[in-house]
Amino acid sequence: SYGGFFSQGRYVQALVDWLISEFNVVSTDVYVFFGFVALFLCSVLSVSILRFIGLNGRLYSFVLAGLLVSHPYVAEIFTFKMALPAFSFALLFCIVVVESVLKFSIEEKINNRYLYVALFGAMLLVFTYQIFINTIVVVSAVSAFFFYARGRVDEVCCDGYKRAVVLFL
View 1: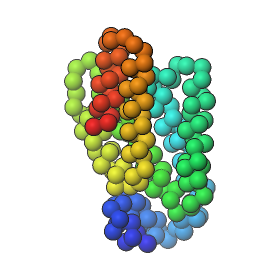
View 2 (view 1 turned 180 degrees about the horizontal axis):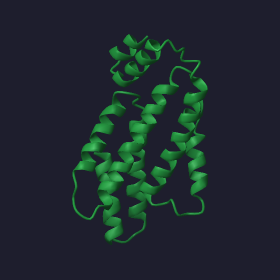
View 3 (view 1 turned 60 degrees about the vertical axis):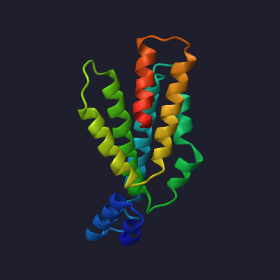
View 4 (view 1 turned 90 degrees about the vertical axis):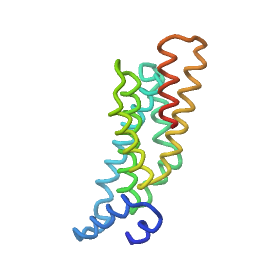
């Protein structure tokens, strides 16, 4: 079935499916493992997004993380046993993109290495499971809104706008 993924442009998902079949592992046998991996990576992505927006120190941040993990799409994906390996890799790539842009925006001196890592992670994300492109766009829009809503122009807000624009691009 990896030929179908390859023809859809999901090259990383095709590679994961091919590796699973090469090792003679039935994807339903690794369902529980990838379910735990996906739940862990959803939690890491939640923390990463909250750090990116600047809400990680707030008391209500655990509620926002819970809403992200319990979103109907994320909850539904756990019923598709064949999708969990690719979903886990896509979560990992999304975390790499968000954290790389965050690291780029808080560095004192400009270091394009983080942008290259973010670009490579975004490319792998597109070639795995495209739904997280929506997550990246929403995170950049929400972070721009939060920094705009603060109503001041200082160094923190300028870094926030920079962070949101770089993530969006």
